[in-house]
Image (tube, rainbow, N blue to C red):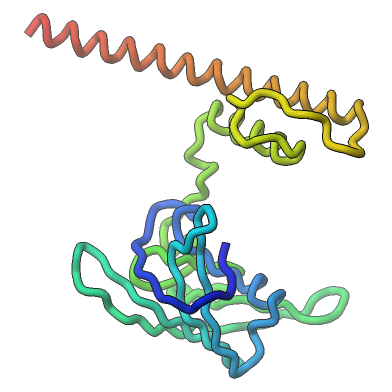
Length: 212
């Protein structure tokens, strides 16, 4: 995710899912104390610890101003400055909650996305969540990896089981292992079926070519 850093600007291009785009969460900015008027700071997105893109942000009383470099289709980089209005709503137990006003539809949203030339909300950018595009076996594999992370095991189901975390009850450990193994089985079964279907499709194409 993003964070404060060197301030080096990077270029980027948008993609079709929220995970592949550049999310800017107003709640994160507030938690980090970055919405006070007059602040100027850099914000980075990283992948595997390496910077993927960054922008400058200046906070004002009723808006944030984004400054970044954008390029597409091999054209020269363009410096973009975009103002995004802020709104606040009262919380039930006191205090207030900030929102972005989407620059395109003006709806209150917590997250805007850098997908394309300008930032806007998910719906205006036509973005889907990555999980919406998953097959059942992809979803099972992702859930199995989530259990591995909870158990402190090495990522990737190919690495097999790891040890029981210190302090975890054996009953909980056994339950998570059973759930993990069930998800791995579902994932491998689904992938095997897909590979079998692919082989059948390739064979049909080969047969058509032979007949032609």
